[in-house]
Structures are given as structure tokens and as C-alpha cells.
Length: 237
Image 1 (tube, rainbow, N blue to C red):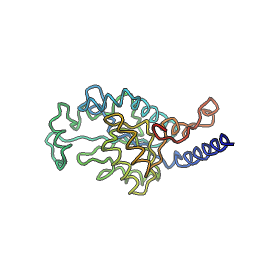
Image 2 (spheres, rainbow, N blue to C red):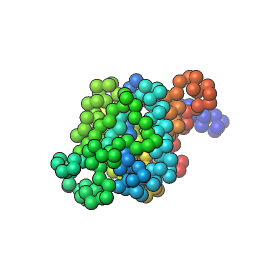
Image 3 (tube, rainbow, N blue to C red):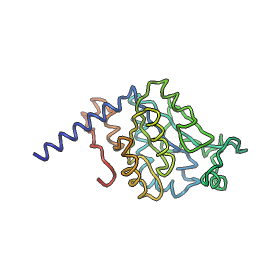
Image 4 (tube, rainbow, N blue to C red):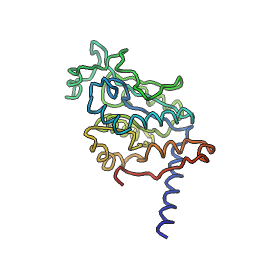
């Protein structure tokens, strides 16, 4: 009986997630998945190492590919600055420290290109910001999403320390439903990510896995080949 109840709960969760992730009203956001942040020549090597070694970048690449096939709008949020620093924020230690890093996220440089293994399709939108901490606040992301009828935002990328919580909170404050595949975000140290997911992001977003999101976007023929929806989980659950 307990097993049957658990299976029923799993089916309900899967159905709810599938409805929330309707490709027509969903967008996938990748946050700071750029070469100067998560690439081999990162300004933040510890973060880049965690994102790669954990498989986070590979899962984001899989999510991006699945979104392209399903017709889900993909937006890549890139953080950069002008070479003269004009308009950049300096009101936090993080910004001032970034000015001293050996790799700078300069407009037009290789550092602000979307990193491998993510593929950028012609229909993707790349939104760049010169200031602040959030991919949404003070950028074009919100009006672009509204113009496309998006109601659900799937948030992926780095870092779980700063930009990801900003993105989730801003999305919720703007009226979107936020979905966070917990295995498609990364921060430092590595054990910080499951803590912030469990104790903070899970309070305001639907927490799930990359495979569960991909499963929602598969066609019936894909599902007949063995794809399955996964239960929403928190890391360590």
C-alpha cells in the first residue's frame, strides 16, 4: 500500500511538472555560462572546476539541446563590462574584486562567449548586462519573456552563491513560476549548493532534476524509447 501511494505521488508530481513546463510558455535561462566564468581559462577557477567536475555544465548542455528540439525559448544571460568600466557597479566587494582578476569579462572578448559544451542556436537570445548581480533586474530579460508569453522560467548556471538566487527571486517577484533543476546549478564550495537549494530556493521555486525537465520536453516517440519523468527531488533526499 505504501508503495502504491508513493507511486501515485510520483505520478502527480510528474503531471504537475509537465503542465508547468509547457514548451509554449516556458523559457530556459542559462546564467553566466561563459568562458571567462566556467571555461578552462576562467577568472574563477574553483567555480569552473566545480561546474565541470560535477557534471553541471554537461547537464545544462543537455537541457539546452532538449529545449531546442522541443521549441522552448533559450536565453543566455552573460555578465560583462566595458574596457573603461563605464556603468559598472562598484558598490560591493565582489565588483571591486572582479576588477583585479587576471581574466576580465570584457565586452567583445572570448571571456564573454557562451562556453562549451553549450550550443547557441540562431533562435536563442543572448542578454548581456554591464552592472548588478541579477540576470533579470535592469536587463531585457523580463520584457523579452513577456513578449513571448512565457510564464515559467527554468533557471540554470552559476553561481548558486549569488546570481542564481538573484534570478530565482527576481523571477518570482515578477510573477513567473521558477523551476530549478538542482543538478544544473553550481556554486562554491560544492556542498553550499544543496544547502541553499534545500533551505532557500525550495521555498520559492519548483526544485527538480535536469532529467525530469528533459523528460517533460520529450515527444511521445521519445518516451516510448525509454525516457521517463523523474520525481522532484532535493539534493540528498
